[in-house]
Amino acid sequence: MQTDYLISGAGASALSFLDVLLAETDANVVIVDRRDAPGGHWNDAYPFVRLHQSASFYGVNSRPLAPPRIPGQSFDAGSFELATKTEILHYFHDLMQKTYLASGRVTYLRNSEHLGGGLVRHLVTGKQTQVEVRKKIVNAGVWGDLGSIPATHKPKFDIDEGADFVPINDLPRRAPGHDHFTVIGAGKTGMDAVIWLLQQGVAPVQISWVRPNDYWLFKRERILNHPDLFTTTMKAFLGELESLANATTVDEFCTMMEDVGIWHRIDPDVKPTKFHAAVCSIAEQEKLAQIRNVIRMGHVTAIEPRRLLLEQGGVDMPDNTLYIDCTARAGIIMGQDQRPIFDGDTINISMIRPFQPIISAALIALLEARVPDAASRAACTHLVDFHDTPAQYIAQQLPSMMNQAAWSKVPAVKDWLGQSRLHAGNHLMAGFDPADPEKSALIGRMGPTAKQALQNIPALLAAR
Ligand SMILES: Cc1cc2nc3c(=O)[nH]c(=O)nc-3n(C[C@H](O)[C@H](O)[C@H](O)COP(=O)(O)OP(=O)(O)OC[C@H]3O[C@@H](n4cnc5c(N)ncnc54)[C@H](O)[C@@H]3O)c2cc1C
Image 1: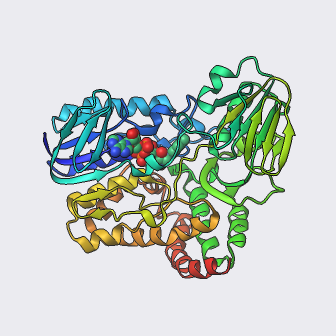
Image 2: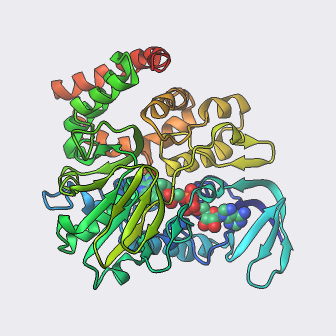
Image 3: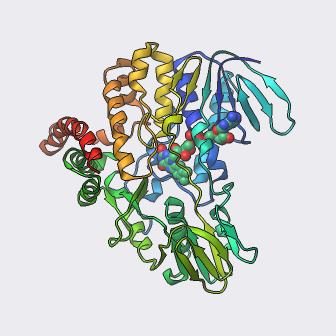
């Protein structure tokens, strides 16, 4: 078998890359994935999972997933444009069948592992096929592969066989008949489990929540890239830049982010130490704050039917408790292990925009297709790592801002970004009216404030 490009992985990042490559070149592609269907981890996600961010800029460039909409004021305000697992998987399935395979330019090897160098092994039969790759191998599964997902994650604590313990995937099936629910994990998955239980009508007193750490959260209502919300969202983005430009310590930055209303937290009495860029509406935050049985005694070490053991002690649990595991870790910090993106005859898909793997992959494909100059490619693709803490988040603003500055200097990239549905800012800028003095003033302040932020970040990080 011969091809121009072999893409290892058929998750959202791989498909975003493939979509732009097909649009911008005449290349043929072999795409390989261990899973039986396109969409990567979404195939094994828990049934009630949704996107964190708006579907208006998720998916691939050539096809909308959902139009931008304004959130309602209901319990799950802001969530109805957050595509569900079913919607996402249907979207990727349809694209693969009706667009990519129908083009005659794509060969899709499912249930197959890329062993490296174009060698592919079918996982069911074990049959190996050497794919001859004329141009490049694209590693689009590394980041997703390093993280863990609830369905396949192995908990790091002992579980007594008498304890009723389930991964979040099994919660809808196993919840009936239980009197108490103990959610283990403080991240977005834990929040989703608590919200799901409350939505079913479970009383807050029937829920215990193990939260070894607290997290800062993006306030969804303030970061919506919708044309009608231009002023609100732009003020929030400007507020973030001003916080980066003026804070003297990381702690002060966090307080400023809360004061300008772009971040919030579940418990006003506990200062979070973590930030994974999870997005949470005000209505969700208010619901989550109703849980009073919060266990802050470190990580769980063992689970017994009526007792939970933690690093800093033990807590008795009511009879008939269902324990829900939400401790898988999706986002991984790559650190020094990251390979450069353009790496000889290999392309390593990584983030070049903070916590946005999808547009990152699309931009990398565009650079491959349209920008042969190595120096321009390098200037546009400083690696942006994932982050665990606010300080790490701040540090990643530097490569991100350098990339953005470089993108605006390369005409092919600037033009593509100006019309791409994957660029969240385009949805927001559709609400910009140059004749409106308030909106113009906001735009006018962005550039100078970003420069001040760039200058202040090193000092801000050094002071922590
Ligand atoms: C719950 C949740 C909500 C999210 N919401 C958003 C959101 O709203 N907006 C947003 O931008 N991002 C969001 N993200 C982050 C990110 O955009 C998605 O997780 C995205 O689907 C990641 O896609 P991926 O292709 O990078 O990784 P994966 O989905 O993990 O796909 C990688 C694929 O590569 C395959 N693979 C790896 N190595 C090999 C190999 N050697 N051979 C064959 N196959 C291989 C794997 O089998 C896998 O299917 C969310 C993440 C989670 C977990």
